[in-house]
Image 1 (tube, one colour):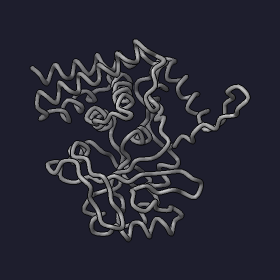
Image 2 (cartoon, helix red, strand yellow):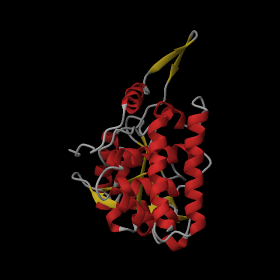
Image 3 (tube, one colour):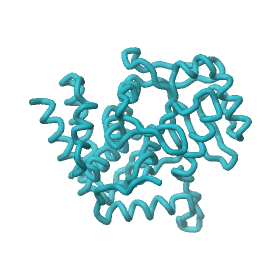
Image 4 (cartoon, rainbow, N blue to C red):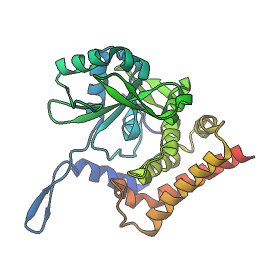
Length: 278
């Protein structure tokens, strides 16, 4: 069982959790009954990690992306339709075919040509790779299994204190590791969602002893241009949510009820960045 989060956020996140719990159902729009997409949950994430333990990946798989929120106690809902798990690039290069076959025997079908796997009940997870940060973003693996390797994620996962071992096997990002991985993620699609998730965890965990220092240490070493980018992108996400709660951005609109918490997280981020600028 995960420990309880030390800080609780106001009622906005409670509203989000209730909404997330309903997202896998139906809603009416006029005379139509609309099927909502199935939201991934922590139980499925842990089942995937358990399945990967029976492959050459072993216990080296790490919950990342929005799925990282399933790795520690938090009131922030992931609002994600699939699970993202990062595995060592070297393992995929050495044993990609074995990984695919071992997962197939456990009921996970590989979408050939991608890093996507589909479970017996239609749940989906994607494999990513991590390796040497200096090699930047690239595609790794073998013909049997190709994975996208991100330099920034590799940088975070390369810090031993940025992940923790889970009781059932596999690893997860720490809250600080999650925040920094989201702040460093650069993408147009779902980019606002990344930043909002980071700011919400900052708001929730900011009062914890040592948490802000962990975030600071993971950001240390980035050049001033990159730090300015982090500040600007977080501010943009915060501004959009406050000024236009009706905005849409591939799931980020689900965080509209918690604009005040996002703003609190942004202020905590600014305080951390000011220390790095000093």
